[in-house]
Each structure stands twice: as structure tokens, then as C-alpha cells.
Image 1 (cartoon, rainbow, N blue to C red):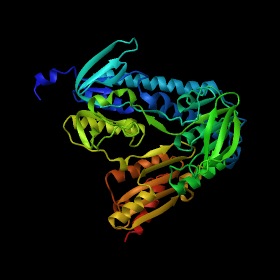
Image 2: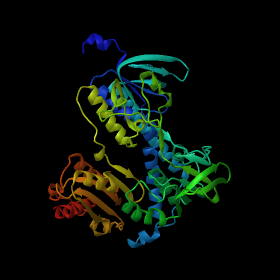
Image 3: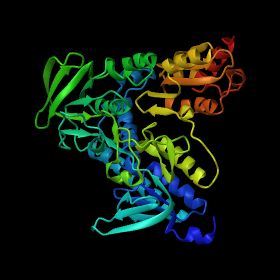
Image 4: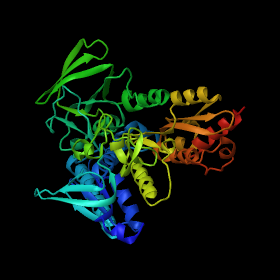
Length: 482
């Protein structure tokens, strides 16, 4: 492209949204010499930094320490007798807030150092290669850019019939500020957000009722992993979990009233009166006010359709110079997925063709112990095996056979490995146990490289470490090849 045609645009790239996806895209673009602007109307860092992964990990770290120190039976196994544990709710909340502030500042400085321009305001499309930014003052400016990336993220989903007031009935957005500790809290939803907050609240002495509309608790997890994990994460705690039950209405107040009905029949079950309700029923894309119709884009339930190069699609065909990344694409709604998509989009803008590989992106739930997964579920792997005509292999490796887990008195755990019994290719893994979120990375790398357990079984692991749980699984899988 000639300098003259490049110079006719205000920017080479405008990114709408400064969450993890937008941040990574803007930094990568600016580092590679593109004149880049990033538009953000709320806090820099988006959901992950301000209302998601970052503050929730701070709360889980603090409440996890409380849980450890209060577990007299576990400590007795080491010959340790601790005094009754005391904690200050406000200081735990402050730890999360300070972490958010630090990471938000670092992220902003990183973008500025890379040379990106930060435009404060609400961004929307104004036709092809044009972005309007409405500042808080109401002033609106239109900028032109050779390429535009939409990275507007998602917000918590509140089902119909549930009324929130931000204090007695709230979503994860408010829960992370830990303003108070309800004596009895109902959590609607048993996905990773509901589980993580159940972990925090029970560690800090709250009673939890978990309400799951689907027919089993933890429906998004591998069934075997969910079964073993629930013993400790739900049954072993002050949690009353109910599946197949729908919160038809939730009315804020003191107490909060929850009208429960059977999911299948819609017959009334009971009305609960609790101190607070956390609504953890998933997330919805932020795409309504983007003026997508100005470029002819139709969303699917609010999600922007993209191909594996992150190009926005209309009727299956890419729209020139328009890209979308992160939660708004509805692929895997995880911060590191958004960041990966941001990198892929910018590489393609730079002319380096690259596609995203969702199969190799891991996911983790930071409960105590953790749950993680990568690649295919067992159901999807069975489907693939039937379609491609190979035999699916499945092995289990247990933490109770691991020296490090036994030394920590934390031997509750399981790893399940899925693989192709002919080629040995690793198709996926599901882990529940100590440091599962770190252990999954090794398998994610193997999936990314489409490696076979034939080679992986010979890789030497440090003894004694938890990584030997993976080594044992690889060895078992290699022995099961046909």
C-alpha cells in the first residue's frame, strides 16, 4: 500500500474496547508499527481486570488461606494446631481493589509506551472504515481507519423474572467488591463463576444454596470430573445444591424472595427467603449499540459471526477491513481466548496469515482444589472418533498415586486423558485436583502441536511433582495404543 493511501486514514487500526482482547490487539498492532487507537468508555482492562479474573483470583487467594487455616483436621495431619482464624472482610476486599488498580495502571502504561492512542468514549461503527466516538461530555468525533477491530466483550446475563438491585440481588460485577458477607446466599448457576464464588463465600463462613436449572450440578464440566469434584467442592461444604430447579422470580429486599419451580414441569417447588442472591447464569455479548447495520452485519443472539482469521462475516463472507475478537464473538468466553484472537486478527491485518486453534485453548476454574480442561469433551471426542473411523482411547490418572499430592495431604484428584488409539494424538484432558489450572498447560501444548502419546510418554518429569500425574496418563495411553 502506498504511503499516500495509508495517510488518508486517521489511523491504520482502531480497536473498539480495551478489555483483554482489545488490549492485546492494540499492543500487538502498535508494536508492529501500525498507527493504532483504542476506544474505551468504561475502565481500561474490561471485565477481566476490573470485574472478572483479576479481582476474583484475589478474593479466592485470600479466602483460600482462610479455608486452609480453618481446616483443623487437615492441619492435624501435619501435626499442626492453629489458633481460631480471624479475618477482616474489608482488607480482603481492599486486596482485590488494589490488585485491580495496579493491573489497570500497568495495562494503560503498556499501551501508551507501545504508542497506541487511547480514545475515551463509547465507540460505534459509522459505515465501512469509520468509527464514531462519543465522549462522556456528549461531544462526538468520527475517525477513519484502514481496519477496525470490535472487542466490546460481554456483560453478566440476568434471566427474565430476576430483578437485581446491586446489593441484595447482584451479579459477579458487584460480587467482586465483597461489600458484605450475607449469612445465607443463594447462587443461581453452577458454572465456573458460581463455583468460584461458592468457594469464596463458604470459606468466609456463609451458607450457600446453589440453584441449577439443568438436570445436574456443574453441567458444563466433564461428568466424571464433576462427580468427583462435587464431593469436596459442594457436598463437603456448607452448600445445599439443587439441580433441575429454576428460579422463576427473584425479588430483592430483606429477605430476598426466590420462587423456585421444577425446570421440566414448571410446577412450584418452594419459595426461599435468603439474605442475598448472586446471579451467575452466564454472559451476553455487548453488541447492541455498535451500529452494525451500517456495515450490513447481523448478529446471532447478539454474537458477531467471525471466521477463524477473526474476520467479521455477512452471509458467510468476510466484510473487508472489519474484525471482531473476544466475548462478543461468543467462541470461548475467556480472557486468554480474547487475547489469542486479538493476536490472530492483527497478524492477518499485517499480512501474516494465521488461524485460531480453539482446541488447544485451556480453561480453568480456581476453586480449592482447581478444575481444568483442554481440547474435546468426551462426548465430542466420541463423535469425532465415529466420524473419522478411529477408536477413542481414555485413561485416568489419580492424584492419590502421586507423591507430591500425598506429601501435601491433598490427594483428592483425577486426570482424564482422551486420545486417538491409532495415532496416539492427544484430543483433550480434564483435571480436578491440586494446581489443575497449571497442570493443564502441558496438555494444551501437546494438543496445539497435535502430538502423540508415543513421544510424550518418554518425556521425563521432575520427581516428586504434580506433573507426574500427566506423565502417568501419557504412559498409560501409550500402552493402550493399537
